[in-house]
Image (tube, helix red, strand yellow):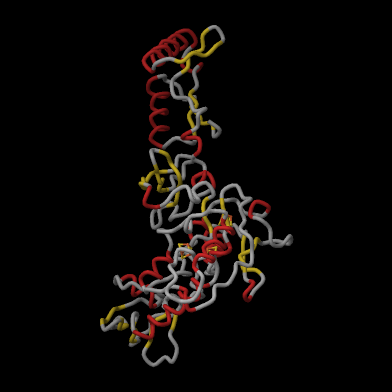
Length: 380
Ligand code: SF4
Ligand code: SF4
Ligand code: SF4
């Protein structure tokens, strides 16, 4: 009988399947190996190295996300050497660019000057817009790291604020590549890639016209890259500095823009929706959204929105109560049906309402009005 292969992680034995990496086995068994560049629905790149682990017999630490599990492998995920390597990676990341959430220590760097420089670049006087919702910040806290051992590097590129929905802040980019994978491998929009190289590395738009603003590129503003970005380099324009994570309540719901039924979270502050994001690990969208689901919620709070029924009288519309409006509709439909038959009536529903609402409309048309004239209008 074939025995399942076993890997030993932190002194415990775990079975694994042939396609699993060290990270897969660890996560399946609730062992927390930190990641930054790893994106679940894409090929692991191992570029950030924060997931390095010690494997017995290997001279170098190995990235858990890109190293296949092997029979007899002995792994340590939080040894002193591993932790030191992670701390060094975090220090370098925090020292590169405007990571002004990190408190500088007792070194001789001028903390005030640094903050003032960041504020000028960002045109804002608060700490980073994703403070409290940042994977790098979480890890800096977990491993007690601040960037004080290195000179900070000034941001080589200006912030991009001209796009309708997304602010790109290159000063906080850690070059993890998650946005590139999210755009190319998950959404298959192929709008962005790594450009330049070396210390000049920047996420640039794809295409013959070179490095453009997203609004002038093939970007369709699905926002997959924002959701993938682990830091404050890509942020929703309307939410940036207007909302902090602890100020909102997240409500899970179903997008009503089309029949796909994407699962999303709406972040609500003071009774208003301020942000939408896809629900990870849930069908049918597995965290992805399109531009409508992610950014198209302004209409909910629009002043132009109809809030009461309107009845047309002598060519002009007047507001009415629901009882009056429904009575009038029922009376007119009954009258038309008696005079001209059921087939003279048609029902128009919407692709932007739920399946349940369309089902009720269909029942109303067929069972009550006795007509099969029912369709939808995508623009309703
Ligand atoms: S991106 Fe994260 S680590 Fe950098 S300043 Fe913002 S909160 Fe801090
Ligand atoms: S918004 Fe969508 S299409 Fe545009 S860069 Fe991000 S992932 Fe690509
Ligand atoms: S923009 Fe965000 S997701 Fe993209 S490389 Fe930079 S840090 Fe990573």
